[in-house]
Image: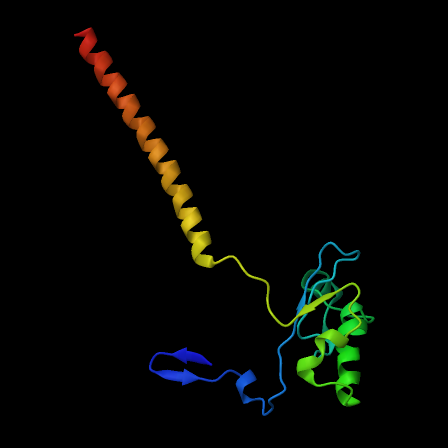
Length: 148
């Protein structure tokens, strides 16, 4: 559950009235040929109205099924509809050959870590510039005193 200021907010997942529920994540694979870009709404999106360029940049399958359809979405629906498995046991029963699907997201680099790195880099550049300007100032003032 998500917690806000002074209140508890349920996610949509919390409202699913089942004990056998799991969220699965399809992962992009840019090394594949052609690259497989996870389009998380492709199972519920009518693609007839979208331009081809959108799918080239955003991912998913517009004109024909791709590996996510063949190895993940359709087999999942068949297994569940035919009562061959529970949703929370689905992952090990899918014919995943060229795509990656997981029930946990891979660790992401923290945004805070990125900000600290960028700020540290900026501070280093500014300190270097300040030191360089200070060193030039000291050298020029000592040269001034020697000439007088």
